[in-house]
Length: 211
Image (cartoon, rainbow, N blue to C red; front, top):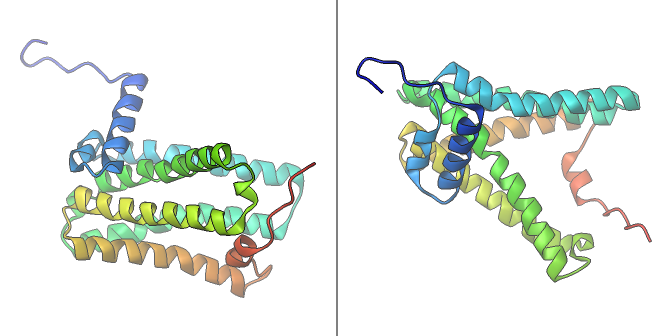
């Protein structure tokens, strides 16, 4: 490339490779992974797009199946939780004087949020191969999911440290504040009709496997 020329535009495949590389590096505790994510509104919108598409599919599926107050509540919580996370994290970043890096942090956080989901599927699949029937065991599932949740909390904390340049305590406070804000949505869902209780649903009996 000659001096002063415009660098070639990144292809979709190149962007996907860069994002995956960044997520994997962050997931392994390598702070340089944060550099794989843009610090622009366009980068953030690209990170929001997969979740928005998923919410749209869920909403359309619910519309086709017919109105069910509990299922609609679940979808509304998912739709509301994403912007709530962004609003809370941006507010704290501004208070702490870290607003200039918030777009990169938010972009990395949204892409990295898919990693624990993929990891849980991989772990459950391997566990089912090694110990058939484990997916019907409540204690075994609880152990696996607690491990995944712990990793997700650590990953959120690490992305906050890497993306916003926060010290450990402030990064932990950010993660707690964001999760408390999301938890408030579930408390509101319990208080208002149809009184959806996610914890009760999670701890309820597992569906019996088909013979």
